[in-house]
Length: 135
Image 1 (cartoon, one colour):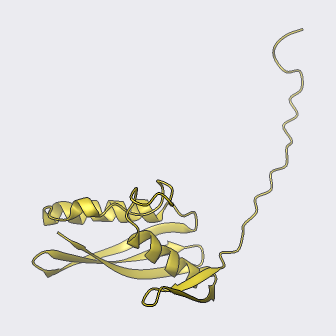
Image 2 (cartoon, rainbow, N blue to C red):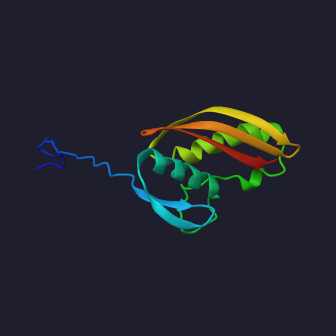
Image 3 (cartoon, one colour):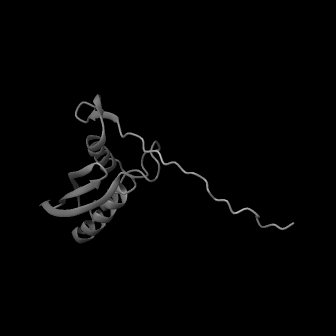
C-alpha cells in the first residue's frame, strides 16, 4: 500500500461554454437604458466603460476592471505617452473577448491635453476608439 495513485485515467471531459454578449445599451447623455445590444456593439460599450472607469476607485468593480489614469495628470508628456499605451492595453486585455490593442496614434491637442486613437481587436471585430488625458 503506497501513497501514489495506482490509476492513471485522466480522461475527464471539460466543456467550455461561451455565453452570449447581450447586454443593456446605456445612453451616456441621458443615463438611461435604451435597448439591448450584442457582439460588436456590446464590445464598443464595454471598451468605453472600461476606459471611463478609474481602476481601484469603485468598490462595485473587481481590481481587474477599469484603467488607472488619474495619476498621469500633470506628468511629463513623454512619460504619459508611453505609460498610457501600456495602461490602455492592460485594462482592455482583462476582457477575454479582447485579442489585442493596436495602432496607437497620439496627438497633442492643447498644451496640457493628449488625445490617443487606437484599435481594439476583439473576437467580434475591431473597435476604433479615441480617448483623452490631461498631462
